Image (cartoon, rainbow, N blue to C red):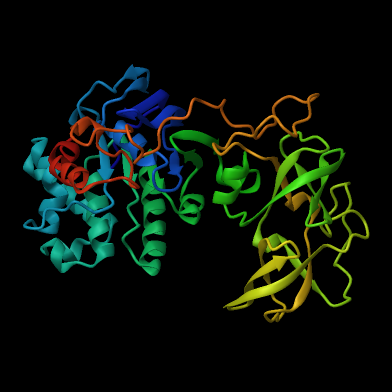
Amino acid sequence: MTGARISTLRLAGVTRSFGGHQALRGLDLEISGGEFVALLGPSGCGKSTALNCLAGLLPLTGGGIFLDGERIDQLAPERRGFGMVFQNYALFPHMTVRNNVGFGLKMAKVPKAEAAERVTRALDMVQLAAHAHKRPGQLSGGQQQRVAIARAIVLEPRLVLMDEPLSNLDAALRLEMRAEIRRLHQRLGLTTVYVTHDQEEALSLADRLVVLRDGRTQQIGTPEEVYSRPANRYVASFMGYRTLLDATVTGTRGPHVVVDIAGSPLVGLDRDGVAAGGRVTAAIRPEDLDAVTGDDPPDGTSGTSGTSGTSGTSGTPGLPATVEVVEYHGRELAVQARLTDGRRVHFRTRKRLAPDESVRLVAPADRVLVFATDDGDGQPNDLGKRPSRGPGAGDGPAPEQSAPEAGEPGSRDPRNPADAPADEGAKEPSEKSREARDIPKQVAT
């Protein structure tokens, strides 16, 4: 069961506005056939808007979408040859599982014998053959999502679009369905665009991630690139760098810088070409901070040479902190501590710590990422940047004129259907109703 495989899908400056609010700002992305791409970001970042533009459910305000060199953004949804899996499943409650899966084939006037064979194969793939006679109300949430996936793949689509398909499932089912989606993608050679706000989900499923914020692209890269080398402070915070500490650069030495945190030095990896005296943010993952108790020496030494060890220059005692909250997570503890200036940090440890206990926090210099402090849009400001160095590898796109945020006066006209909220953070019942109403068009490709 394989459809016509695409060569490339290109989004060129795709923009979508709702009144005065730009929900998506010049998205440039090229997807190769067979690739699994995840659009990742919090509610309201523009990821569902991008997916709906791809599906043809929303017209573009600017830019174009090209499939194998042919412009398709003017085509109706049913003429694009895409399959779509919705967050709310959008199954027909009065139809059996078999009829739900085969509905698109019926609308496309596929011969009955061929349609029956394709539906059977699709149900076998998602392990629902024994439930073909049931109606959606008789199925669990995970089974309903499998029906929705089967309905999309039975069409043998050129592209599969998935809009947060696992968000309504419990944790155990999410893990099970995540593996199922990846298995089907690999088995069928699908080209998939997947929308999610879950970092772990995106990292485990996708070949490439597109991180969005307020409609702007922040970073495009492989899961390893985005996880290990976030482009800016925003991406770092979204990808698990829970401790973000504003600081001032006190010295620069090769690829590393020394910053002042609550009166103590911290050595980190320079990500933006910062200068002495500049305002920066030090980003650290909880698993990269180590707690040293009492007079125990750190596990190693750290300096500005990039070797692993403590957080400061050689012999630096680390950041003094007081334990506030300790959470039991099985083999390790998740700890929240307070620095001497009142700021909170997060770390994980196997040591048995207690509230009010004093610790020193150390980290390998290469695991502390130092970014120029941004201006609130994910773009670093010019203060603190080294004038002799060009833009860093992690710099995002050039800043744009900020558009009104959703909900601000004048951002959209609620009386105008074209100004309906674009993304999951601003969806209204009318949009969900429209999605459900349009499903015969989408699945009848």
